[in-house]
Image (cartoon, rainbow, N blue to C red; front, top):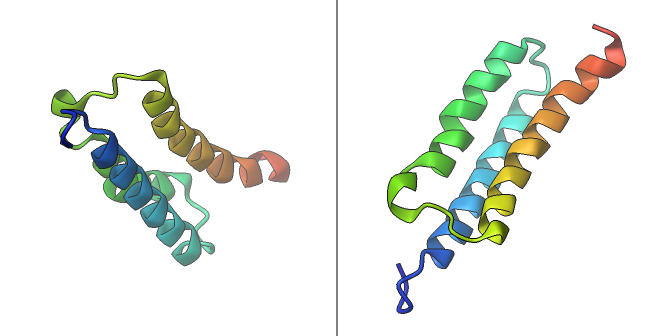
Length: 88
């Protein structure tokens, strides 16, 4: 919480950490073919950071909500795009 009693700094740090962890997952799991394994990694390393303490700092503004949802949409796009292009 900052001087203005908002969680903007916390949310920005949380988003940065989630992006960093998602990059780690993508770099180190390029050979993984099982979608369930990728989802498990996402829930463990990314989503857990996005949801931790959400009852306290609940994103109030649309900008904050969109920034968090952008991370989730990006993961789904990267996860399912190769599957759709392979025709599975």
